[in-house]
Amino acid sequence: MRKLYAHAQEREAFGRPLAGFQVTRHKLVDMAMLTDVARTYTYRAAARIEAGVNALREISFAKIFTADVAERVCREAIQILGGYGYASEYGVERLYRDARILAIGGGTTEIMKEIAWKTLDGI
Image (cartoon, rainbow, N blue to C red; front, side, top):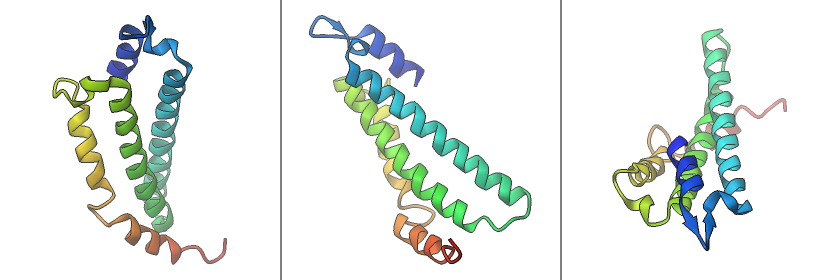
């Protein structure tokens, strides 16, 4: 995120830094917020496991949500970086490819939703 933030501050488009555009600032805020929420929810699931509580619902929700966030954040980073988003020195191109597998590996999103469905009684 730091490299991306610095890039938005330094890179100019139409005579001003990318961070000078409200849409870019809002994308960066959304990315930071979603990443923080995904991390917090994952930690919550881990805390429940550590406490010996059945965390199947939280694990499923965390996997679904974090896989989606990872892909979205990488996609937005490439959008902000433009052509640099495909350059290996920025690393986002690899992260974007890796993010896609998160929704597949370790249980597809559809499988996670089926597991979560089974925990919804009592809501």
